[in-house]
Length: 112
Image (cartoon, rainbow, N blue to C red; front, side, top):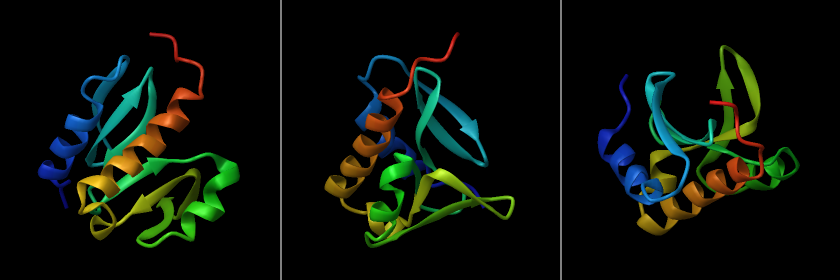
């Protein structure tokens, strides 16, 4: 399965002016990194993956259209999946992208 290019373009339009953003193909999708830290990605499984603070993960997972991110059979702490239905509206997608960027901003930049 391939990622939703229209969804990736919507994310691209939200992060495009942020200083330190880069884009990289990862995990069959396209990830948006801030200073080297992945913040959000259009997933090859549909919807998006979002970086969240570990201490907020349970609260975020209680929100509609969310589930733990599982890679290679293991839950990836600090990440959640949001279904396509959870990011259909521009407002919802904007909120999720902001959440991922906020968490990435809290991390020290990775060396180039």
